[in-house]
Amino acid sequence: MRIFVIIFLILVGTNASAQVFNTGLIAGLSGSQIEGDGYGGYRKIGLIGGGFVGFNISEKVATQFEIYFINKGSFDAAHPDKGDYDKFSVNLNYIEVPLIINYKISRKKIKIEAGLYLAKLVGTPKLENEFGSIFVTQFPFKSFDFGGLIGASYKINKHFSCNLRSKNSIIPIRDFQNFDQNVGLLNKLFNRGWYNVDLNFTVRFHFINKKNVG
Image (cartoon, rainbow, N blue to C red; front, side, top):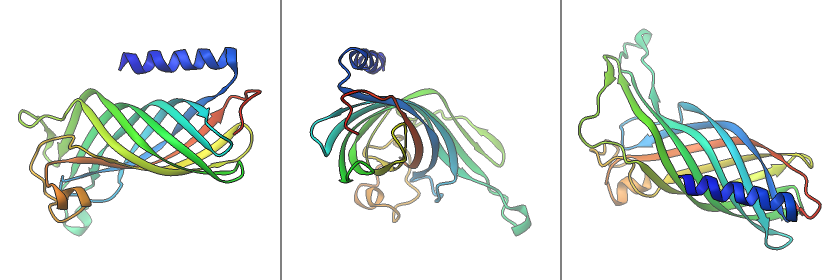
C-alpha cells in the first residue's frame, strides 16, 4: 500500500503548485455486514478517515482517487430477554483506495458516482461469539479486498459536501463455508465464500483551488 500513499502525496503536491486538482479530507461512518456469515443487517458500525484527490475531465465529469482507513465486519447482538443468547461479531480494519468516476446531474450540487476499490487488510481480524474469541486457524481472511461501488454526493457549500455510498466485494474476503447460499447476488451465482458489504456516509472538506470547477 505504500505506492498508493506515495501517489496520493505526489498528487497533493501537484495540486499545491498547479492548482488543477480538487483535494480534501474525508470523515464518516460505515455500516457493514458480511454476505455468507449467516447474519444480516448493516449492524457493524465503523469509522472512516482519510483524503481524496480529484481531477475535472470536463464541466460535468471528474475522476477521483481516495485513500482512507475504514472499519468493516459483521455484528449480531444477543437478546437474552427474547431467549436469544447467540452473539457474533467480526472486526476488520482496512486501508482502502477507490478509483471513481463522478458525473454532475444538477449543476454543481449533486453528483452520482461509480468505481472500483482495492483495500489492504491491516492488523489481525477479530471474531467473537457468545463464548468469547474465535481463533481462525483455517480459511484465513485474505489480505486484500477488491470490489465495486456506487453512490451520490451533495455539495453543501464551497468547502463541504456529503456522500452516501454502497460497496460490495467482487471476490471473497474469506474462502469459508457460505451460510447465505440463497441470499445476495454473489452468493446465488457463485457461493464462493464471504464478501464485505457496506454503506458509507461521509462528510468531505474541500480545499479551494482557483481552477477547481466543483
